[in-house]
Picture 1: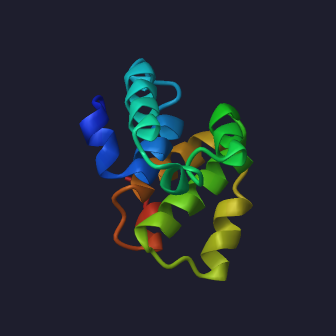
Picture 2: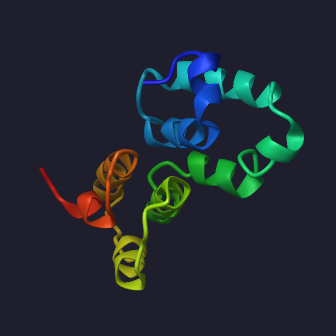
Length: 120
């Protein structure tokens, strides 16, 4: 879990998505404080895509499956994990926010898109 500005600065995209993923967690305040500090210290041309209003709105859309599906695709894209059209459709058609939350958490460390779909 990310709790310091130093940790947040290492990977701003994943830190931003960690805040979305852990929106229900008691630790979300620490994550948000860390990412906020890191973004304030980051040149605007680097932080602007991360502070985009659409991404922030997705983070606020707790309980909305489409917000979590979009966040999951962003995580995979940022990590360079290939997402074929079939997998993209499977992600965006999933209407279960809890299942998408679990998949989003797995996407942060998944080696492939197939790893995201594996239920423990």
